[in-house]
Length: 400
Image (cartoon, rainbow, N blue to C red; front, side, top):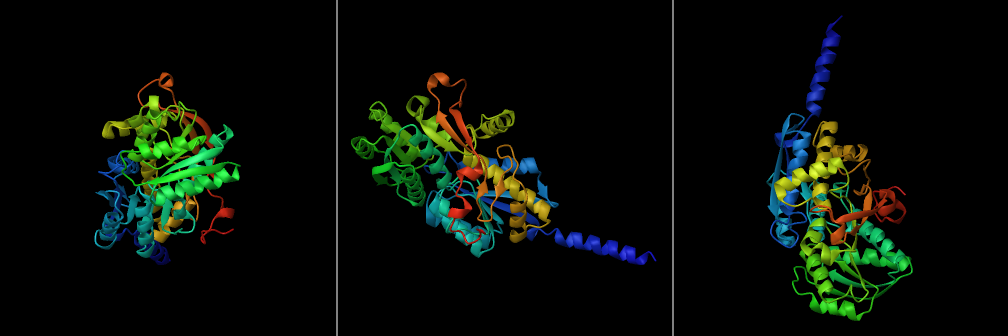
């Protein structure tokens, strides 16, 4: 009479063992980032450290199998980034690619991940098209995008009287996307675009661009660029007296590392939007100081996004009992996103992580109480209000 029970127990054990499958007996994540070019401080070595910190928090194994973090430098070159990702996916047995600052590279790798049934955990790129017309069931866009940055920042600056705008835009996918999204909200709110100029990435001398912005007499000069380009352009705008002349400067994508490079004297009063800030509460301060000890920089939202996306991915593997991409993505969408910097986040079907965003203003030097105390959080914007609503989306994965 007991034999059927024994058989059932054995079958259940065999089923559990079979379902707990990890391909190649290791979960391998590749951090594809900028280790040597103009975006190094915003992602770079800090992104690798953030991924390692996620593994430290989760534990060295998942479902009894080793977790391995590898990394490579895409040098902000699309051909280099694509080649690395192809090698990782086809020969290196990488299960998920992580970070990818630079939207041009990210879009190419995002498409490749879908073709090869891998997972892309993106915190570095900003192009909102990744979860709009280009959406994929294999991508997680974790930290921010150009839609949210533009909506939050433009709305705040317009409310303060910034009606006419001039753009200084990086001439690649991210810059174009950021200017396009910001223009939409400026027009929607009754503002106008009086001019703009495109610049190559890695530009050192912004004098001609800044002078064009100054001569436009626009209320607002908006910098749709990133990394050292943002640092150089805002710093030189200050040197040419744009703020002293009454123009507002807006960094449509700025990080704490940019403010650190520019200095509070040059960056004070600038509005920016961020997905995280190191100095929010005791937990964020503790995590960030641990990060600082390893990287000598406080974390940007790219770094905290790498940490959060890797941690959520590992939790999903554990819950799914496998690293099969479809099952893991289903669990990532099912599980709430909870970590040091994200509370009650949700992965939408289009790959967009819906999470709170923060409107911030750079402090004046006299307001800063300690090193890296750079931001005043002006307002918390709920994710549902910050990101592109389903009703506006072109993503076929969403049910409208």
